[in-house]
Image (cartoon, rainbow, N blue to C red; front, side, top):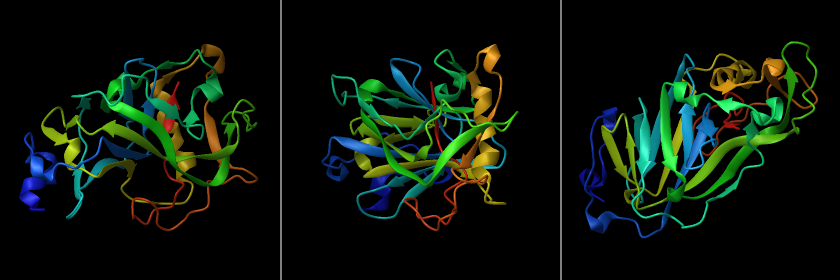
Length: 262
């Protein structure tokens, strides 16, 4: 494939609004893998929102993997959305993410989302989604304790938590990013990989340190105004680091995992 005929997003400013049909992939869906300090906001009945909390030192990137040729990577800035052309399915998408850490597990079902206050959000209508599933989980089982008294949160089920979420999108859609300055026709990509992670690593307790960035984006009942801290089951540390994973980067697997609202 001629790279100029694919799409150019280097620098995050170019737009590819037309695609040569010869280069479109013959498939109905395009997977989007979501990893890192990302909030999956499912409070809206019409659209899934992927929110990036304000977190100093973190960087949001999108890797575009073509059928052939080199990957393209861009930095995500501002808001984005998926423009659905032909719905992936007339029915509701299949959502099965039991490993995803959800805020309602700590604070109940009366919580409310405040992700509209996040500096960057990608909105995906449900009629453009075929399924949402867990792709990868943490190496170790995780539990949570209250930050104020150190007691384990009994309403949370200890488990290997979701490290990467897979969202199957209709390939007919167009992903628009950087406040509509960048357009990515999904039919041109074999898969997309979105990650919001620290640019530098300073220790191996990142999940404990970084989970606090989620709290600003969930409205909790006054009686449950306490923070929670993740820890490895059977210890007081974050999961054991591992080398290499789905994104071909040498990161420990314990720095940032997604969380869900509600």
